[in-house]
Structure formats: C-alpha cells, structure tokens
Length: 171
Image (cartoon, rainbow, N blue to C red; front, side, top):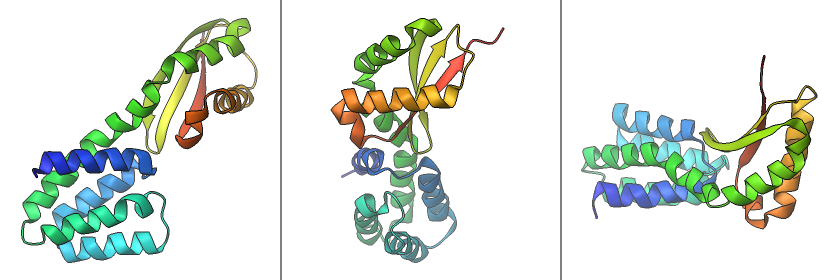
C-alpha cells in the first residue's frame, strides 16, 4: 500500500476517534524531528495515559511505525497525509446531516432572524455556526439549547464531537 492509501485509512479512523488536530500535528512534527523509536514510545505513553483518540488509532499508528521502521520518509509522508485530510473526513461525517441540522436550527431560531447555518472544522470536531439577525441575549444558553435539541432529534449526532456557536449580526 502507498503512503496515501494508508494515510487515508488512518485519517478516516482519526476523524472518528476524537483525536485532536493539534495532537496529530504534534505526532507529525515528532516524526520529522525525532527517531521512530521515540515516536513509538510517545504513542504508547499516550495510549497508557488514556488520551482521547489514542485508544482507537494508537495501535494502527504503532503498526505503521513497526512495519516501516527502516523507511522513515514513508512514515513522514503517511502522517503528513493524515494531518492534511483528517479534518476533511471529520466534517464529512456531519456534513451528511446538514439538512437536518439546519431544520432544527431554523425551527428554534426563527424569532431571532435566522439567516443560515454553516459547518466548520475545529481542533476536536465540528462547529455548527448559526447566523442570526435579531439576537441580543445569552448566546451560550441558546447554543446549549440548540445542541441538546440537535442531539435529541438526530440520533447519529450523539457519536460526533460538535459545538454550536451563535453568530449574531453586529451593527
């Protein structure tokens, strides 16, 4: 398998594992600057500490390092691909649900001058940005209410890391 194929498979796993983009960048940097033995030990350390995401993807990362111990450029290329594509796969899981998300948000925010919903990637998941024209209250409270309602109405969102942000129009 090529670095791209392995990287794509690992990126899909990373997207669903909950591992942060910053953690992946740290692994990539470590791969470039340190010996693979140190990367191996670091991954084991993170698994042992039960760091989020490493339980799901850590064993595959260890297999990658072990299988290509004599080919560090291959490991670097693979982890580069993982870092560059994980957010694409992470947001792809929730993008399929965008019509349902927009329906719930629109229903809850019509009185606030609902303008639209947009999805963006953040370090540990996806951000649901909701744009409102006439909102002047507690944005955190409304965001939490919308998040609860989304999780209640869309079963598959219970397994996805996401946050809701209210973006009121500033005059």
